Length: 220
Image 1 (cartoon, one colour):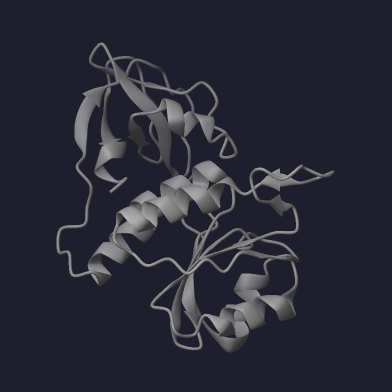
Image 2: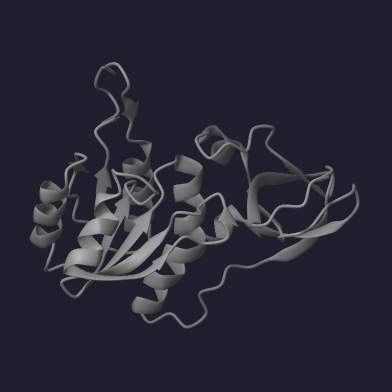
């Protein structure tokens, strides 16, 4: 597992100008260990193509390379460039929110999943996409998390063009959502009990029914 970005620094160290803590590393390492995976921590990659190639090549003996960050559109998309040049970029971008810039491919034959760097995007894409992939690799057949229908206690007036997974919880039998659904707000995950699934092109009124995916279905 590796993280990418010049702006990242490990928790506990003093933040410099323009830096943020690498919260994704601790979340994912704990999650992967709970799943029975042996984690090879490759640290933080700077925004540099040659170093990206070198670090990926050093991980040639692992079963999967899991990355966070460096997969969005822009000049710093070095993971995508490395996959295109020395492997295969099979999938890039999904119609979900948060988590649109997810990448899947191979680097010199090793599968690579590139998760978005924003914490809420990492949470959603690992829970709903990377985790089922890993479970299937471990021989598990039924990898889909439990979903159940609940009425909503909020309105959703504007239909989106992507399927949305809102951090929410159940109160008095209805799903409510965290007030700030920004993909950079990890606090929403600590508050939430699960994901409220809002289908693309959908508006919601109080009492309408949606799928709810409990976090305890995906955290182990």
